Image (tube, rainbow, N blue to C red):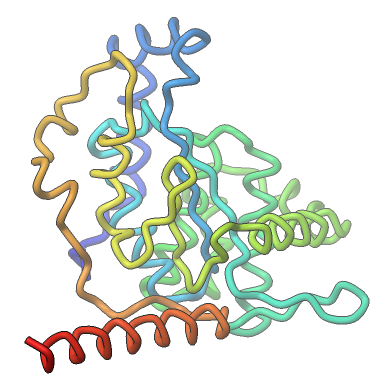
Length: 263
């Protein structure tokens, strides 16, 4: 797994502020209308209480801001994961009702504060508490970040949050190829599978704009193309897809064995 050190909320806020106030970012913002099409689309499909999901958000996704690579990305979060839709549009989450609550809360945050620099600090704060096994204290993030809790509460109680989750369910189900586990990271339409922790290298490879980033120049070509995560797959939910992947692995192994016998 990636390093277990957790940047402080103040650190995160300073990162976001420094990015938004720096001359480089200002110059970039002025030309955003003409260069936005060059941004690399990054999609994260996750569920709030899945260990691999919150570890990825806290330890890896934060690097977008630490490196400044967020300036060339269009990041979209989908807090739904492996939940299931039942009768009367009821939602059952893989890690229970608490996960359904936090999935909906984070969906509301994205809806109410649509700018990444507005909703990500809140989501990062919540997931940091999950990381520390303190997720029942998630409401403390309002005070820590100086946010009004009423819009989120109204979104949740009015049913809007559930509508947002059903929308995320449809978008997650429409993935091609289908997601097999979470976190499921997609860069410019291409899923990264088990190599999701190396998402920054894929972003740098996919970027074809003119803004030069020192962080990307430091990522070697070998690292970008060959680095693979060796940890176990995250929270699995799509059993047919998982079984199909296992079947493909077995068939590949059998073919290799047959070739070895005939050599």
